Image (cartoon, rainbow, N blue to C red):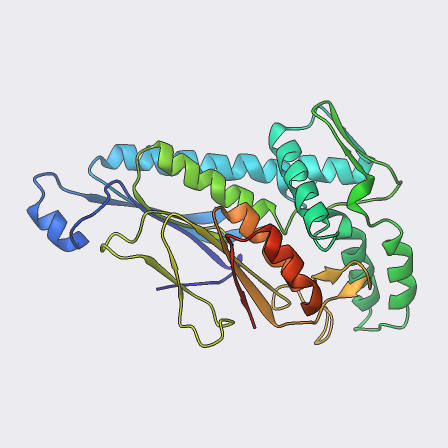
Length: 314
């Protein structure tokens, strides 16, 4: 059973065959030996473990290499920690000419989520994060927090981003975005699609969010547990995705964390955590963030727009 451990240890497990028998039996009865190929290193700033099962060890290694290269390439677009990434340049200059297609696609997807959630999901909340970071930098002193929030809130609105294939531009000076609530899901889907195209049939990708192709190699679903599920030991994944969101991530104090309700300008504390199952990890990722920062009386409206998701709140 896999456990959610956001950005602490990322894993990919994949088999080349849709298995009708438990893996050990299939291996014993097959004329062709199924090899295990693994890689350990750093991906998306976290320790990562990727394992592929395939009869051709060289093919498995090349497939792993392709996944790693794609993760690094997408990091160069979405990472706030990379000063030369596309998003960092956009935040610095307020405009990005000839933006990567991936950034345009993610921002357009995010814009749709923002509309459907009435702005609960908003990629322009980065100034609020910086305001809280500044307030808590001096031994947790919050004396100036309200002042910082008031200033930062003027910069927050998804409606103030102009997105075209030719350029991405902010309408207001000093706006900044973060894609931490959606890019992780996008990258998870991208790696899943690479492995699908390469013929892998039993895949679990955990890059902070989960996506799956088929079930576990032992002829069952992937069982994913999280400590924030009420009265449920685990969720089953099979050709679908899952993401969790909660204030347990980056915390400034016991009360304040990194998930903001843009209407108050500060940390949302309506619930402890939320998990969303959806058809892809990018949707699950964005909606998990949106539901977490949305008051209970407004969540049903979002669920009606996305009737095919599964929502778990604690």
